[in-house]
Structure formats: structure tokens, C-alpha cells
Image (cartoon, rainbow, N blue to C red; front, top):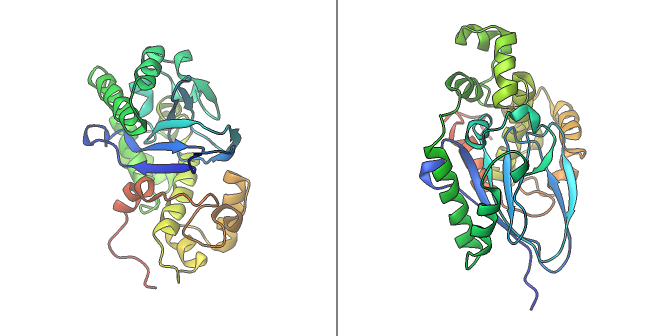
Length: 274
């Protein structure tokens, strides 16, 4: 019997929480699936069971592909700036790229074999996380200045780049140079990406009675039209096309609560009244 498509996001094991935003298992089911990879600010490691692991670099616009039927994929989505030291690759070489993991990092064939031997998707996801924990033990932590800058660029902490560099005692050109190496994109581009991710997080958690304009304002958009322009630029779709008729779900019906939960955890406790 053909299995229905599955997309199951989860929080990573605690040892990876500082680097990995979410992990997941995906099965495409009996028919091909249109996959729209959205800009999230970080790198993704995607491992096709029985195939070659690959990296999806920091995206500045959506990438769309057709996934064949019958695939099982496990993956990890990194926080901005957290993948580069772990995977030993400058993040700016991965921007808007989908590349085989083995082209940029060692141990890819061993990882593929390990996951292929797993008795099921859940076991494969555990093996992937154990591999990342092992890699983490032998690598330096992310650049602390970049990590602090990323934290301050979250949508719930509106700030200008000039104010940010003054607070961190670094010039804009130096901050941009360190961002390109560690994050892959500049601070302003990341800020716009995280603001959109903030909107999607709010939409995921929203009360069904919430208005799109209210969610857009809380995420930092000037108005509904501003959100629409940014959504079209980043995803190629309008908010309604992306989310469907229900504001709290994507067009594929995926539940992204695990992915957006860490973003919402940094949200101020005092929010706009509904």
C-alpha cells in the first residue's frame, strides 16, 4: 500500500540546540511533490535515504524543485551563522546553491551509508543528529560577535544596522565581511529574511480570527502591502498563495510549529492585543 506524504518537524537534541533550529523527516508518498525551499537565513543539510546528502545554502529567494515519489529524507536546518564552522565551508560559497555535501565537507559517504543502514526514518534522524554532535565536538563554536548580531536581528528586536554596529563596537564593513563568511549574506539581507520568518511564525501560531495586517505589523512590516512585496520577492508568491486560504498553514498543509517555536520563544511577552 502506498504511504501518504509526511513532513514531520521536530526540535533537535539538546546538544545541538545552539546550532540547529529544527530537524525533520519527509516522505513524498505515491506522487511527486512540488517543494518550495524558502529563505530562512541558515543552511540546511538534507539527506536522502539511499542517496547523496546535500546542502541547501542560505537563500535570498525561493527555490522550487520536484521531488520524485517514494523518497524519504531526513534533515537539519541550522541557525544563521551556525553551520559554517561545523561543516568547514565559507557560507558565502553556498548562497542560493544546492550542492552535494561531499563537495564541501568530509565524511559525506560515511554519513550516507550510516543513514542507509538505519532501520527506519526515526532511526536515521537520530543517526544524523549523532553525526552532527560528533562533528560539533571537534569544531570551534560560531563567531560570538556574529551570533550576538544574529540574535539582535530577530524580528522581535527591531534595530538599525548602524545602531547594531555601534552597540557591537564594529564598523559596518567589518560586520558585513564577517557575516558573509559565517552567515553567507549581509546583515540587512538577513534582517529582512528573519522578519519574514517572524511573520510566518506568527501565522503558524495565530488565532484563526487574527488579521494578516495585525500579524504583519507585529513582525515589523509597515503595512499589509509591505508584507506583500517582501513575500513576493522572497517566495515568488503572495501571502495568500503561499499560505492558502487559512492564515496558519502553508500551501502544502505542513505543520511548522517545531521550526517556528524557537523564533516565537524570543518574542516579547507583551504583544499586540487582539
